[in-house]
Amino acid sequence: MTIKIPRGHVVNGFESNEYVGNSLVVFVVSWNALFSCYVQSDYLGEAVELFHEMVLSGIRPTEFSLSSMINACTGLVDRGEGRKIHGFLIKLDMYAKIGNLEDDVVFEEITKPDIVSLNALIVGCILHDKHDFALVFWANLHCNLIKLNVGFDPFVHVGLIDMYSKSGLMNDVRMVFNLMPDKDLIAWNAIISANSQNGEDMEAVLLFPLMHEEGVRFNQTTLSTILKSIASLQANYVCKQVRALSAKSGFESDRYVVNSLIDGYGKCALLEDATRIFRECLIVGLVGFTSMITAYSQSGQGEECLKLYLEMLDRGIEPDPYVCSSLLNACANLSTYEQGKQVHVHVLKHGFMYDIFAGNSLINMYAKCGSIDDAERAFSSIP
DNA sequence: CTAGGGTTAG
Image (cartoon, rainbow, N blue to C red; front, side, top):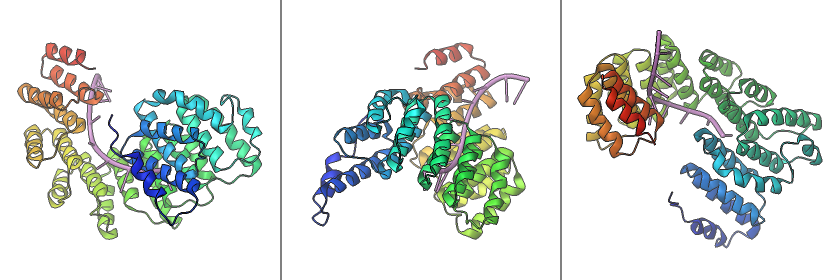
């Protein structure tokens, strides 16, 4: 993997600033800026490596550094790459001066846990990639914190909600949310998203009016998140209501909201409405096309799927494993072997065979098109 | 710290 952002630029950029006095403070801020860049560019493993490097060079992380690390680690666990950075964990433990993570007694040695030690522990738990252990550990940690009457940083709270959510631990998600003294917009979005991600779609949608009752204003993220659950529930009427709400609140031009609306209408089998938004919005890109292709595929209009795909390529939009997977599914439903083969060529050309969804769709397509040979070949070609 | 599109069966 190539690292695009030259580290020196960021670090020297801050160092050479004559208005900034304390170089040690400057350093950690520069590192933090770098972490943020890396995480946003999806260089998660590199971000963790850099973090380790910083810690070894004697610079104490701040809540900003660790907040980036929570994101990086959550992402890595998502991808199943968490183990790769397991080695760093051991050293991280040393830094955190908590000795053996598996012994929760060591926590008591930290008489006044601050944001740094707390966050280091979060990173440690996530890096361990041992969710069952993390659960026990966090349960103990929570008890200790309550006993010690230590306030949580809101960022830590949302980080925890996100981590628990991605581990499927909804009870813990709710516990953390309920512990929050000030539930702001971000907290509400996090709990709604957690419900949505864990298949509690009805709950996710019902939280929306609750949030309103508590006097917390929604934003585009809220709308996009509940639309995903509305799509799963195929709640046609609610979908239309949210569309009206998006227009009224001015979030209709948000990329995520638009895509979620297209997808929502598609899943609710409201093809005309989906098409209208799709055609009216000039910002529709790869994701919008994928939603439309899926919608047509599900309504049995395979020719439209292929037409849309060609239109997409015509507009210079590069395909990805998602759209290929959706397209292969359309071919499978239609039993269009020749077209399926063409999509297979695209999958190979763009190197999407590593993607488990694209691979499965390919196998499925050949199977549905009646070619077991091709299906088997596709199966054994999965890396 | 929170947000969008994809696979398998029945």
